[in-house]
Amino acid sequence: MRLCDICGSEEAIYTNYVTGASLCANCLMNSIRRRAWSVMKRELLPGDKVMVAHSGGKDSSLALLLTKEFSDEVRELDLKVISVTLDEGTLYRRSSIELARKLAERLRVRHLTIQMRDILGFSLEDLRLAIPKGWKRNACTYCGVLRRQILNAVAREIGATVLVTGHNLDDLIQTSIMNLVRGDANALVKTMRHERKYEEGLVPRVRPLKYVYEREIASLVVALGIPAHLGKCPLAQGMRIGIRREIDFIEDSNPGSKLRAFLFLENLSSKMKVDVSLRRCSLCGEPTTSDICKACQLRGEAFRFMGIEDKNIRLDSLKSLKDSAFQS
Image (tube, rainbow, N blue to C red):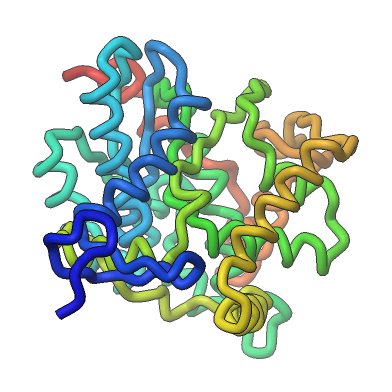
């Protein structure tokens, strides 16, 4: 049994391959907490109503736990926290919703489950079955874009002032490399931007785990027994899979590469001058950088596949939560 190199008294459960130090669960938690809280201290403001996008997976579950801890510890900020799970209607999500509820109950945080079908008129499973064989896009592409729009709309409609997500270092460096490969400077800057910028209709994001490796999170969640789904979505496909594989190879050969690359791109993005201003989509009215948002384009395709009339997103079911979502 190897003891923790920090406290010297507990069994180590994780080795930091950059420093070579082995950490026990408590010391690993302290390390992750310091990094996550440094982000929250910089980006959360007094009186914030914080909606945590809580899928029930390991990353969002740890993000919720750390956000609630921060709220309880820094009481002068008077933060209000709510957990929201978007149910896309897949078997994969069904298995994690109960874990999300369980953690929220343990933390005494209100938990809401929003059905994708109620907002869009179809579930991801409906769409997956309707996509023509050989079509240029897969269900994963539609899910990512539509989820982002729905979560933003939910946060805005229930009165949240900030949206916390569980994106970790691995997620963000993968997305950044994908943006570089596509030559999309605007998307790169939006991914890396960490200053809190107010744009009409878009709820500011906070990513407390952005400096934390995915394997750190997985090790901690297992060691502490945090209720969370550990598997990856079986529908995941596309460029991200290959990018992840290559970046992991580089990291294994050169420990710390992901963090160094992320910090470099974060610094570079802060100096880049690109147009990331938003306008309103001419079809749905949601924030976008173009005349018609990507979500509307994909939603239009989805409706054609299913042979039903195109409709805008349905937010009426959320209006009753406007004044009650953040009440104790």
